Length: 359
Image (cartoon, rainbow, N blue to C red; front, side, top):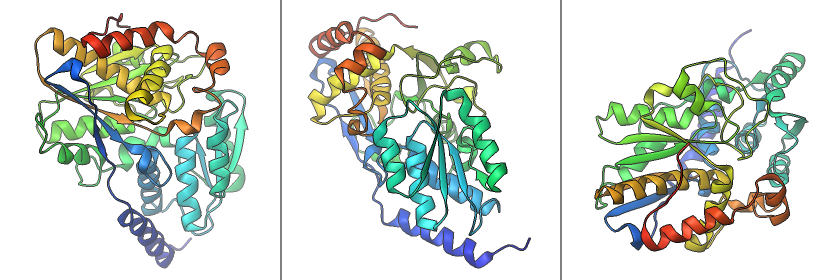
């Protein structure tokens, strides 16, 4: 089959033009007097056109697939996702005039499903998280389409040495801060692609920054980090949408990580609620996972008498989760009591000390 260079050139031009129309995302400094000398920042990825960190990944995956010759003018795009990547890929598929199918668990937030449909994509729902892989491959074969497979290609589709990745953006924006080289960057893992990009960039630039990856319950990543066992699996998927996996994903690179922690799901949701009182807007529960890990590190730094900065990510807007993480009945049934962690966070806000047990 001959290569359609005109289509490829035009497709890449459209994606690059879309990028040029987008400004960089903000770096928000939290006002936390309780940890004087330790600054915490949130890289706000919710301001991308599709509202989440996954917009960067989707752009990279499309460019990677097009330049590899996997996607052409009539290719149906299939992706397995917990929602946010599918929303972003639906956006780029519409930009290029390509059909898009998102294979997702039925538990995916309804707002994400509606956003995929808004961009012209078709949700294809399965019962369990661990069914998305095989079903995506089946559809790609049946429709002669292309399975994007973010869980395999996320870590290689982004140029971690280049000047358009999230790590470069963070360090550039930190240049004029009190502590411009962060002591820690804290990141949760879904595919592992972003943590791989950040960890590689830190090493390539010879920074002293350490990377802490935080994992939700019902995820194998932390256990894999400790054991090295690539065959680990879990029967249940993560209750924190967008992060944590029931199997070890090819894009998760443990060698770039300095430390991992497991964060209780109730702590993740409670921290998202607590952050709303500081920012004045809702965030997703994965942001709560990130921030709770950052607050743990800040508390430990304070108790050791250290100063410095910690950067983590605001992954997406909480308005996507009004029927789940911001629905008291859903939280009570699926997550449990948030009050113990809300009390700990209030204590932290006063004292700068977060008294939690590490997993």
